[in-house]
Length: 274
Image (cartoon, rainbow, N blue to C red; front, top):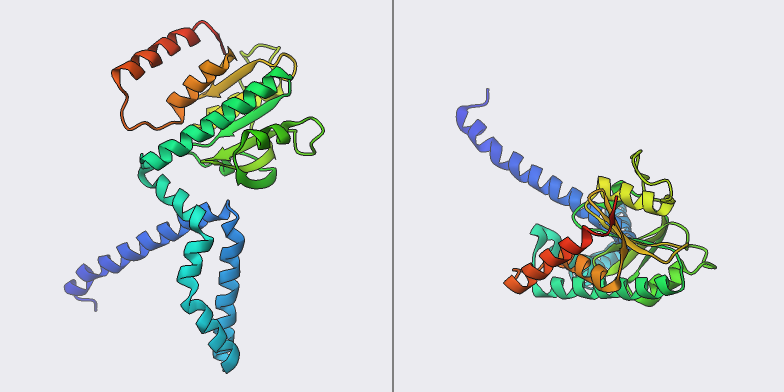
């Protein structure tokens, strides 16, 4: 029979194994959506080969794999550097200055791209991922995984581009996917003039905390959706202020910034809000 002392000591390994299992699961889910997933699969394959060479006593191959794995820690730091940086920045939603700078740069990229697309009336649909994992609700289209730049966004939405239909997903400072299909809202009280692009933006914002920015192909009008609400007819300055308040995680908000934010909210109430 198991004595009382053994039962008291049993909870420690159970807790440790549970924490490790949860940690490994979330790390795998995070890496799965990046270009580092293929590298991770390669490491797993090499580990399988190491097990086989050990069992079959293939000395030379086993020695080569052992030498490779002795340097694998350094290789992992180099190969997974972008993923490690983004993962650490997300833990606890850390608000360091590097992350704030990254968010501001992404915001400016989106504003510049939307401004130019609006001028030439090219439709656009851009989802900015925040804390909710968009891969759970978005039917992902074409993996892109590149730096978020205004030129890249304009190229993606150019009418003759093969991936201009659908939406773009931005994670941090990178464009992860294009030609994505967003879930349509099921609301029946919307204006009949709203097209699929706007209904998809509202639908995604209802299911996640993503900020979705749109450009109308017919009018060039700039809009955004967040938490199920759609605000239309924005200027670039208004969009910049909105994105600054929603995606730029400031450490603290000064009295001047707070007053400016309240003024913006009063202005937006005069816009078309669905």
